[in-house]
Image 1 (spheres, rainbow, N blue to C red):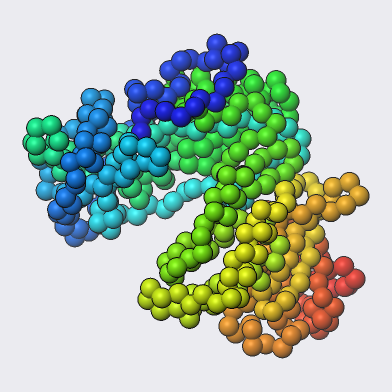
Image 2 (image 1 turned 120 degrees about the vertical axis):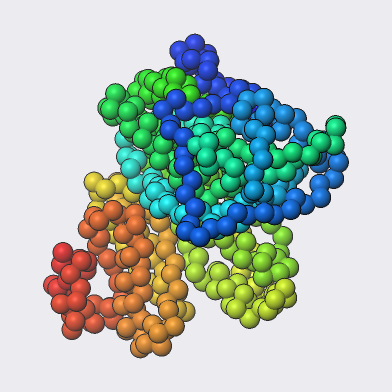
Length: 457
């Protein structure tokens, strides 16, 4: 967890020479120099959580021993005597003998006060990129949560039991930093890092921008030189601030990078090949749980799949008809499953939304799903920005065809606005929609419809 063991990304020598060596992740964990210790607030009337530790095989405890020892050495863990206790689970890393330490904090999460998650929406985050941005850098912070300290009085909440495989001694350990698995860790860390990055932004105003999602940072700039200067400046800022950057994951001053699973290049984004291949290697589901997991993974890619709603319709119907652990898998489901994978592998690159250009939404309704394409002009042709698929609700499905078409239009406009950020949209619709709007035009004042004198913005 505190050591990068995979093959390192080649860092340009000029970058290595210009940044503080402290910024690169090593066995020594990072710690924000500006973050105040976090105080965890429990819900009124909350009682201490006392859960027994699951039996752990000696081999697994031996696999965790080095990690636990390292965490104790660097002060991430300390011995304690607490009335709280939650179990830990050793999870073997794929392709090796190493283990990850996972703590089951679900019971703790239930008694801790919620804080409003202020996290960027990955759906709209990239709308800040401009057509002029040609050069990119992606940085991944290592063990990000461990950079934020916990208040001493809050540490005992996260205690767990540990039995040394060498001596057999049992003791309680607890975290001195934000633990993984704690529901508020992402928001608490994200708020602190964003606050510190505001200081950096004030000193680096120019043609480039910085985007932040969790512990993943993207720099985008118009020129190679600006991207280089911003990268050097940010790396030094992070290193001097106590953060650590994963060296083997850094993508520095490139014309195409992978960010949040997307391949980003000038003016466009497309699904990363690793994401597509990972989904396409998933076998046919054998249970409703496996099907839900599959739909969740593919749903993340729906913006790139034309007629997505038609492909997944049989799969969602299978979920409704399935009971308990038995999945009703029909030939139609199998056909949709194969077509989805094929469509995913052929997914095109989408244009990044450009708020300086007009948006055009092409709406179509077929077999109840509302289908649409959001596009923007690129030279003499229109480049897709996103493919939309939305299911009509039960009430709308029972309406006459003309009203279903209107409902479909409304759904897709709402979806498109997530990308257009309030800009005007020109909507191309079926003739029956225009007929309805001409009769009820007063209810439609946010959309401009070609060939229709009413409903202008």
